[in-house]
Amino acid sequence: MNGEVSMEVTPQSAGWEYSGLRVVTLDAGEEVTLETGESETLVLPLAGSCVATIGVPADEIAVTFELQGRPDVFSRVTDFAYAPRDASIVLWSKDGGRFALPSARCERRLAPRYGPAGKVPVELRGAGQMSRQVNNFCTPEAFEADRLIACEVLTPGGNWSSYPPHKHDEHTEDESVLEEIYYFEVADAPHGGAGMGYQRVYGTTEVLEEVRTGDVVLIPHGWHGPSMAVPGHDLYYLNVMAGPGEERAWKICDDPAHTWIRGTWADLPADPRLPMSSAAGPEGER
Image 1: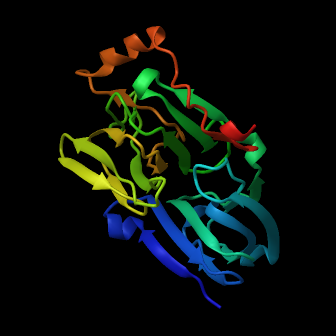
Image 2: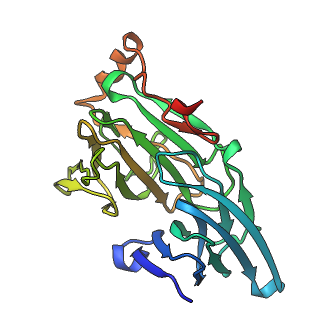
């Protein structure tokens, strides 16, 4: 049985060189086989758990990882797996689910690896209504990759994230060139109504868009932020980044008109709703 690729961004479809993302939906007992091609690729459960078998034909090996996932992106930090370029990935899920596959075109072929949820660094960033949680599962300091940088951001309802606005489209001492994908999920209302948020991009491109679960915003260049979580609806986004620099680094430059806001954070407490989750599950349940 074959699963469904419900969303796909490739370097070709985006009109750039490196960053990509697929979201795969599996029914209970379904499996799907995917090829990584020129891109190193992660398997990140969004909802549900899975078994990922990664094969590298040239070496005639296959490695299988059991990934303990989560009911949804707000429930806990998840396990993940790394697949190198020129490999195959067979995903199978006993109970079904939804799985993200962030990717980046790269040159080196690294070994397949398992990333346990318990080793994912969880960072609280910002303060006050600018507070958010960042799960740095594949940032340069946390996990080795050739070009791929990826993290998850959870923003409580009513808060502003990706703020102050920033960019990373020039190669300087303080900035790196990175193509970026934002993939969004939004918490439903208590009665089940779908939530929404908003994303701003400006400069060379002007965007102010309502975003809902499954939406994607591509950022090849320009200032981006804030990401706005409307009151009552927590906001999640997966950031996928890659670029041409020799150093795999996430360097940003604030919009000078807004960087002053960082100076106010020392006098503001973090949002008491944070952290929202950890590898053990929702913080409120412990």
